[in-house]
Structure formats: C-alpha cells, structure tokens
Length: 243
Image (cartoon, rainbow, N blue to C red; front, side, top):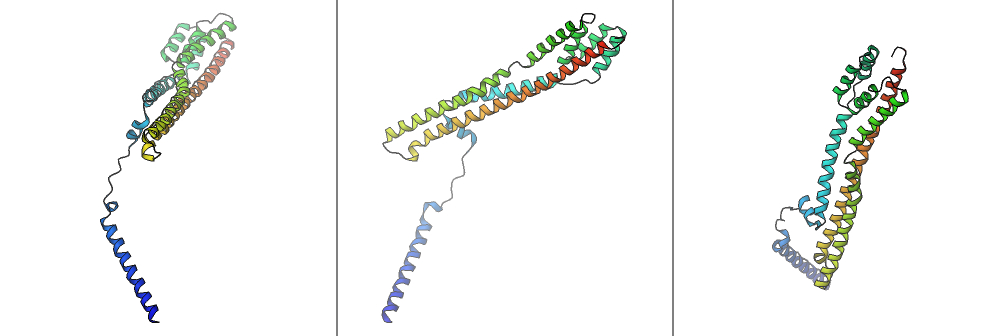
C-alpha cells in the first residue's frame, strides 16, 4: 500500500511538471504571436504565372474588346420594326417606290437593306428579285461576322499558351531542384506556381473566347433566319393581286 501511494505521488508530480512546461512553451512560442494579415490577391497570384502571362493578358483584353464591340453592333442590327413591311406594302401598291426605298434607308438595318435591294428590282422576274435580296442579306451578315474569327482563334491558341507555360514551369522545377540538391516545397514552389497559373489562365481565356464566339454566332443565326422570313413575306406581297 505504501509503494502504491509513492507511485501515485510520483505520477502526479510528473504530470504537474509536464503541464507547467507545456504552458511555458505555449506562452513563449512565436506561433502564438499575431499572424500577419493575409496578403493573397488575384493580381499577386497572376504575377507568379511567368512570362506566358503577357500574351495571355493580351488575348484576354482582345477577347473582351471583340465581344463588347460585336455585341453592340449585332444588337443594333437586330432591332426589329414590325410595321416596316406593312408600310412598304402600302407604298408599293401606290407605286411609290422611291418613298419605299427611303423608308428602308431610314431604318439602317440589314433587314431594311435587303428589302431595299428587293424594291430596286421590282418589275423584274421574281427569281432575280429573290437573288438580289439573298445577295444583300449575305453582304450584311458578312459585315456582322467580321472580327468573330478573332474569338475563334483565341479560343484555340490560349490553352496552347497555357500548356507552353506549364512546360516552362516544369523545366524550372527541375532546374531549381538541380541547384538546391533537394526536393522541398520551398525549392519547387516557384515552378509549381508558374505551371498551374499559366495552365489555368489559358483555359479561362480559351473558354471565354469559345463561349463568346458561339454565343454571337447564335445571335447571327437567329437574325439570318428572321431575314429569310422577311424575304419570303416581301415576295408574297409582290405576288398579291394589285401589287
């Protein structure tokens, strides 16, 4: 019994000493000091992407510019005047073709340009009127499609630039390892940053350009379909008795 009491007393003494030591270490440890404020920012992270971030930034700005510029142009061209055909029908029945042309010119839209081409061919065979209107529509849609190939090309080459940046980052990792003679996170972190950031940036820019290209093309397809319907309605007006 006496031996048991001695063991218990010794255990309590060791436990107290360990607790005091732990408290002293925790009090004097630098880890308890206030942590520096978080300095992470998107710009600082992008700056670690290496030299390939320069062409990537150029492609990003170019894609945004083309997207906004073409969106404004296509939106303006897509404005619809539901009363245009009705107004043209009355003027054509009256034989006032000059006023009908002036009405189309006042609209300043691809649809109105196409109708003007048709009006200027009134009196000729229907096949020639249809062909003139089709050519006019093709010219207008071609003007609206300008610069869209920039988005198509950007969507294809941006991921390639990212892949080149990945290769550069991997080469840098092995070079740093060879210099340091050890594989530690502090040694390979620079190359890893460059590898991952350039790869991610290439994908982001590529996806942006890809989505913008197909979205704008979808709007142009919708406009082309509407212009085809307008052309058929105009030809029906010409085929009406008394037209």
